[in-house]
Amino acid sequence: MELPGKLIAAGFNGVAQKPIAFINGTMHENAFALWATKLVAAFAIAKGVRDEDAADWIDQLEKADAEGRFGFVSVPVLTTATADSTSS
Image (cartoon, rainbow, N blue to C red; front, side, top):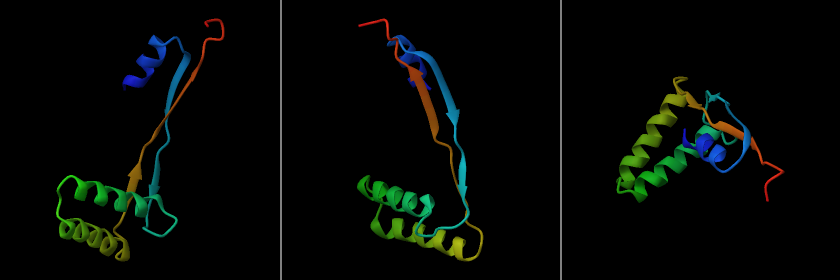
C-alpha cells in the first residue's frame, strides 16, 4: 500500500499497519453489511448501472440472507505513525 511510504517520506516514525477483519453473517439493521450493500448499489447506479439491476442484486442478497447463505467480509487496515517531534 502507498500510505506507509508516504508517511515515512513525510518524516513520520513507527509506521505500522494492522488488518482488522470482520464478518457479518446476516443483513440486519445494525450490520455493516446491510449499509455497505446499499452504498455499493448507490455507487453503481451513479456509475451507470440500471436501478433495476441494483435492486435485483440487493434482492438476491436478501434472499441469500433469508436462506442462511449470506456472508460479508471486510478487512479494513488500521495505519498508525508517530510524528517526529524534533522537526518544525
